[in-house]
Amino acid sequence: MDSQAGLSLGLNASMQSSTGSSTASHSDNSLSLNLNYRSNSKSTASHSHGLAWCLIPEKQPENNVVVVVKKREHEEDEDGVVDGEGEGETTINFMGRTVCVKRKIEECQQSFPVKRVAVDSKLSVSWGNQPLSVADPEIHRIMEKEKLRQFKGIELIASENFVCRAVMEALGSHLTNKYSEGMPGAKYYTGNQYIDQLEFLCCERALNAFGLDSNNWGVNVQPYSCTSANFAVYTGLLNPGDRIMGLDSASGGHPSHGYYTPGGKKVSAASIFFETLSYKVNPLTGYIDYDKLEEKVVDYRPKILICGGSSYPREWDYVRFRKIADKCGAILMCDMAHIGGLVAAKEVASPFEYCDIVTSTTHKSLRGPRGGIIFYRKGPKPRRQGFVLNHGDDSTYDFEEKINFALYPSLQGGPHNNHIAALAIALKQVSTPEYKAYMQQVKRNAQALAIALLRRKCRLVTDGTDNHLLLWDITALGLIGVLYGCPGNSRFPMIVPLGSLTVSVTSHLDLANLYVASHVCFTLESPFSKAKNSSVSLAPFFPIQLCRLLRE
Image 1: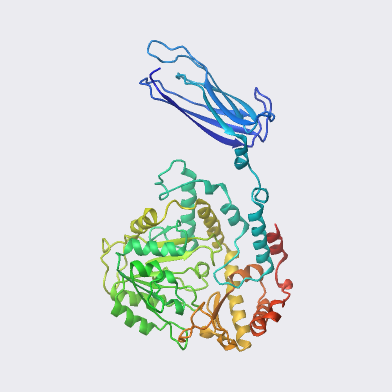
Image 2: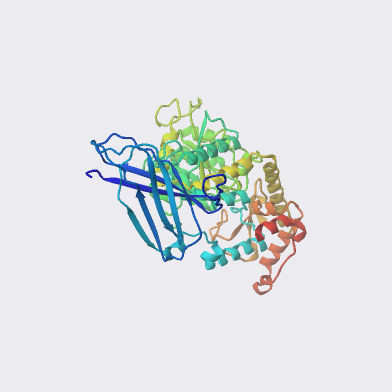
């Protein structure tokens, strides 16, 4: 024959039993085989291929995996077209099992030669369904140790949280197998119809969680982190060398907003590709000095002005930020990575009424998977005083296309579909009354911990907190470090950030924070040999449900 033919095979597991059929009943061990036959013949005959069911009998002792595909020969007419209906047969010896497959040939088909593939049976181990404890005991042991560490300790790290079981199930699901480059509805690969449904649903829930109108706000849920989200905003809306202004890292900002070492070395990508200048907090009070901020903005004239940071325990004056940004025509961007959950629960002021762009992590107060998210304005611009940036049509926002293109294909590849599904689950929980109650408890626990530390004569930056975070200056204890710089002190003394997100998942009693404060003070004030062996019982304050969850 002059024509060349191609055959592709697709195997899908089926966990159902076949009863009432002409064959014997089989359960839990069947496979579906999709045969796609392609012919390069000039014939115009159509080819229809049905779904074949492979019934797996008992295991056979063969040493190799042999796959044989063959089709019953048919007579050809004068035009070289196969007439009539018949059956195609496929014999498969797969992982020691002999399988015979028959499928009905509904219309004419040309024959093709037998194809045989031999695979070493040892490879079947890598194709199996072994649990982690069997497949990789070393990794399993390390993971179990980490689970025990989380169970035994009390997490006060402000940027960490415990996710729910449903989020963990989504992260460890089959969704990680699918590659889905592109925006939902415009993917480059086939088979993304359900992935698109997930992403559309996640975007819808993101807008609902913060009470946003889809006519005025858009959202991108694909960023791998908030740092990636921030850089996508910069590269999408700015040219290299354009100016950005954000809170100084030593004052509670984040390196992704632009960071230089004291020696002038550019550390973050924002500082490498763009020109950045920081504003600072008042060295005496720890609060943002808005008057000096306004002077700097008017003089520096940044294209993007950033509010929000990684360790600022007080409210942000978004009204003042908006007025300052309008004086120089800057885009106002908020990085609410730490306080996103509090914003959704309306426990702190919302940046959405005043900002043009809002970014966030998804794993801190939102209790979702590790990742980032970008909200951007769309539709007509409101009338404001001041200058207007030359970003497309002055009457409408053009952020959507620029930010989406900057994220993909400029900065990232395919999104993590398991992360997007897990984020959708977390965002659904954010919209519930139970989540609002959790955020209220987060604030109460942070304030209770702050009061307990102040009673022990500890120094807190700003003397308290309005969110989940408090900054403890431990230089009075003679401890010097380089983790966080204390405002106004050139020696960079140690500032310990404490957060109540995780402890609020495990404890709903404000009294527990009195014991926590007492123990952490004892730990820092005592010699290392004594503090290392100290312990405090907080069992009465933590529900047994957490113990069960972490032990499973």
